[in-house]
Image (cartoon, rainbow, N blue to C red; front, side, top):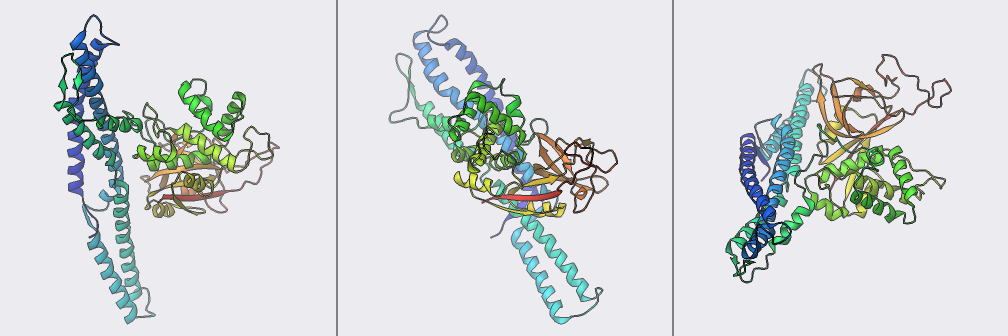
Length: 484
C-alpha cells in the first residue's frame, strides 16, 4: 500500500499536539516553580529552614527525583514544538498541491496516461503538432505533474519519519519514572526509598536525553537570529568565548596538529576566517540534516549538535571539518608549508564525502553548472541539501536591496528555499555569513556581464589594483548533497 496524506488529518495532528504540549508545559512550569522554592529551602545542606527528616525528604525525593522528571519534561515540550515547526515546513509543499493525496491512486493515473500515450503513438505517426503529437505532449506534461506530486509526497514521508522518535522513547522513560516515584516510600529518617527491586534505570534515561537536548533549541537557519554558520564568528568572538568552549575547540585543533602553540592556534583560527565559505556551506548542510536528531549527530561526531544555550554548534563542527581537510591535503595551517589553506569549490564532493564516511555517514552528490531554478526544483525533491558556488557574488537582502559583495571572487552558500516576486521573477534563499539573502539565478549565465554593486553599470573588476579590469573566472554551480 502506498502513502496517503490528508490535509485535514495533518492539521488535526498539529493542532492537537500543540494544544497538548501547551497544557503539559503549563503544568510542568508550575511544578518547576514550586520545586525552585523547595530548592531554596534545601540549599546546600540542612540548615535553619529545613533539618532532619524534612530536609532528607525534600532532598532525596523532590530535588533528586521529581525535579529531574519535571525539568526533562519541559525540555521535551520545547523539542516537540521544535519538531512541529519543522513538520510545518515539510508539509507546506503538499498543502500547495492538494488537500488529499493517495500514492496508489496517483500511480494508477500515471499508468492510465502512459497507456493512452502508447496507444496514440502506435496509432499515429508523423502528424503535425496540432494532431496526436500535441495530445501526447499534453499527456506527458500531466504525467510529469503527477510524478512531481508523488515525489513531494515521498520526500515528505522521508522528512517526517522518525521526527518524534526521541520524544516517543522518552515518554516511556517518563512513565517509568512517575510509576517508580509514586510507589517509593519515605524511611523513618525521611530518606526516599525506591520500590523493592527498582534500580531506577529511568534516571539514566533522563540524563541521556538531556545530554543531547538543550531546553530551548534554535533553528539552524533562524531568520530572527543566526541564519546558518559564519566563518567570522570564531575569530571575532575568541576572546569573549567561554573557556569551556575555547578549550574544546583547541582540543579538536590539536587532535590534528598536537604541537601547535597558543599563538599558532590563534593564527589557524584566522586562516579559517579567510577561507571558510565552502566549509561553512558543507557544515550548514550537515547541521540542517541532523537538526531534528541531536542524539544521532552526537553518536556520529562525538560532541553535541547544540550548545547548552540551544544554539547549533557551528564553530566546533567548522573547526573539525576545516582541520580534517587541511590535514588530508598535507597543509601546515600556520602557513609554513608551500600549500596554504583555501576554500573548497564546489562544495559537497570529495572532502565532505571522506569526512562524513570517516564518521559513518554516507552521502551522494551531483552537480550542474550554470544552474537554474528548474535545477533547484529537481534537486530539492531529494532528502538532501543544496549548495551554490558562484562567481561573482551578487546577493540581495530579503527586501530586494543589493548587498555589497563581501568578496569579489567566488563564494559558496547553502540554499534554504526559494520564492517568487510579485513580478513573477524567481529567486533562491541562501545563507551567507550567517545571514539570509536572496539570489537570482537568472543573473548568471555563460558569457553574461555582471553588476555586483547595483549601480546600473556593468563591473570592470580590478583584482590586482593596476587600474585595469582583470579577467575573472565566472561560474554558478549547484550541488545537491543527499544523505543516504
